[in-house]
Amino acid sequence: MDIPENQACRKRNGKETSFEFKISVIAEIANGQISANFASKKYNISRSTISYWQKKLSNYTVEKKYKSKEDEIKALKAKIYDLEGIKDFQQDIIIEFERVTGKELSKKFLPEKLANEIQRKKKKLKD
Image (cartoon, rainbow, N blue to C red; front, side, top):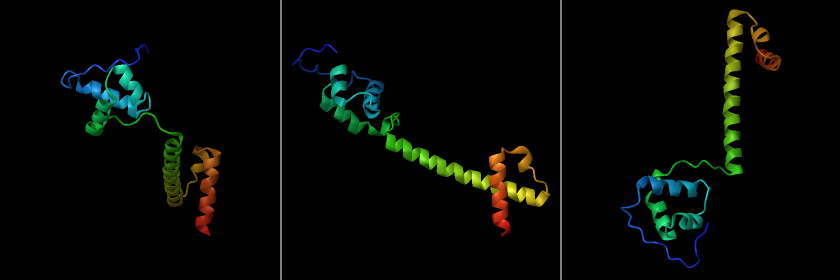
């Protein structure tokens, strides 16, 4: 970016800057796309103004698009935990359905791995 050294930031009147622009600048910083310092240079806005916008408009910012690896891993682990719970619940329903109807449809319609899991669960319930 070609910004001359020691150039003072142009004073902007807050009324000239649109709300959408302020939110977009804050969102770029929050998402990790640019730093506050770079945003200051890129948009010719003082860092204190950006800091002020962040404090005042934090309720309006868009949810982060960028996630750290730890946050992403936590989210994926939580999703796996939820999906395993759903799978167990569905298997219990299938087991109960097969018990009531007397038909073993899981072997016929489900992949072999899932059918075997259901059979193991059935054996545990009988014991």
